[in-house]
Structure formats: structure tokens, C-alpha cells
Length: 191
View 1: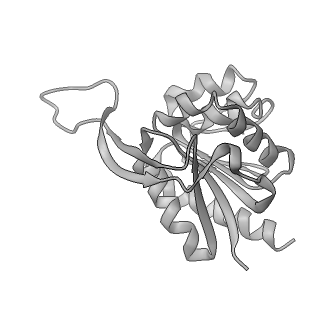
View 2: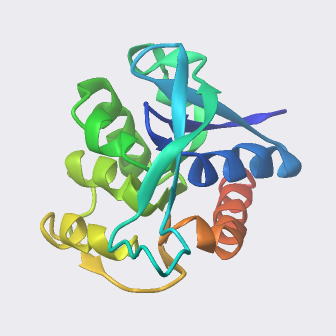
């Protein structure tokens, strides 16, 4: 039996946040289903602070990257078909967090205590869904306010586990974050 993990995205999804789990989870038998506001191809982006010290940047620079196909629209997802949720980052969460279908999907995973993994700006979706009050998470430092403004506690760590919620700062923390998420998924399906 193949167990499915839902991955919501939109335009400007960060490709390292998205593609690493997209390819990593099937290695342990989990099918990643990419969903978007519509079932279509989305533009991925790459965020980095340019390494050229002669032209300093205080923030990350965004540039085009790979495209990612969403095979289902948020409104057509039956969350009962999924064992986990992966909230990737980039600028996409800033926009898709207003989609009421996505917010209801997100609430399902929190309410049912299914494994959830959030990296970088992915926390903006969980916050908008009203799901992080009383929870402790990590994220990219500039999203600390998104956590604390919605009643959560921010910690600066590569990965943080709060019951069924696994969070990481950025794609640089993919390895320890995904290790914990895979562990949680395996424990959930073994019940």
C-alpha cells in the first residue's frame, strides 16, 4: 500500500524546499501529491543571498528555477486520503494562505494529529489556518513574527519537533528535518 503526503504549492514556491521532499519521501514508500490553487504547472524560484561580497544583499535574492506540476486543485483534495502534510516555503505561502480550501485542508491535518512538516515560509499557511497557537516551531528568522503573532513560540534550531509538527528553518536543514518527518510518518502509518 502506498501512503500519500499532500504538498500544497503556488507560484514562487522555493525549489529546494519543495523538490528535496518531493524526491526524498518516495524513497521510504510515500507518494507526494502536489496540489495548487489549480491543477497546473507552477513557477519555482531559488532564493539565496548572493555570495559576491562586493555587492552586499541584506535579504535573499529571488530568481527563476524549475517548474513544478500540481496534479490536483486544493478544492478537489480529500484530506482523509493523506497521511501527512508538507508545507514548503518560498513566497508561495504568502499568497496561497488566503485560499479557504487550503486552510480547511491544513486544519484537517492538525485536528487529526497527522504528521505535518513546515519549512521556511510554510509556517504562514499553518498560521493563517489558526493552527499554531500554543505550538513551538522553527522557521527562517524573518518568519518568527508569523509564529509569535499567531500564539506560537519561535525557536532558532535546524529542526524542531512539537508532537506531530516538525519544522525546519530553511532548505539548508532538509536532512535533519526530513529525518524527523519520515520517522513521524512511519510511526503514524504503523498504528
